[in-house]
Length: 93
Image 1 (cartoon, rainbow, N blue to C red):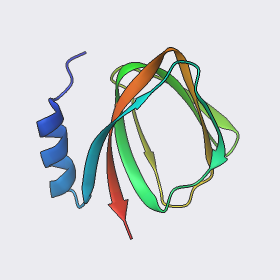
Image 2: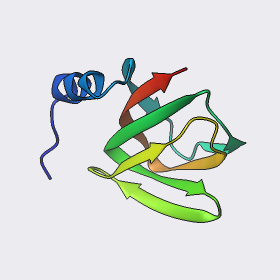
Image 3: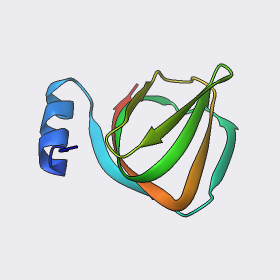
Image 4: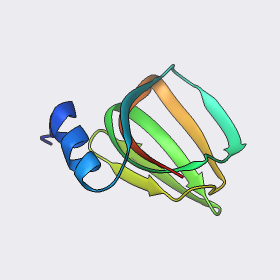
């Protein structure tokens, strides 16, 4: 699967109204218990794998998978044996 470059992802996200774009790297086997964020997100997994659980529904996300979360939505995150990297656009406020 061909992913856009980080710069392309950033430009598209900023044009869509997101105000912050960054790359997040997660160590192997990281587990984040239920939490929320004070911002909305749109992201694409660029390396590794993760599992995202929202409202009891778990998505297995691999390279090229995308996900979105509204602000303040409770969710869990779990990362695979190789960890994961994803690019995320955040919409604060």
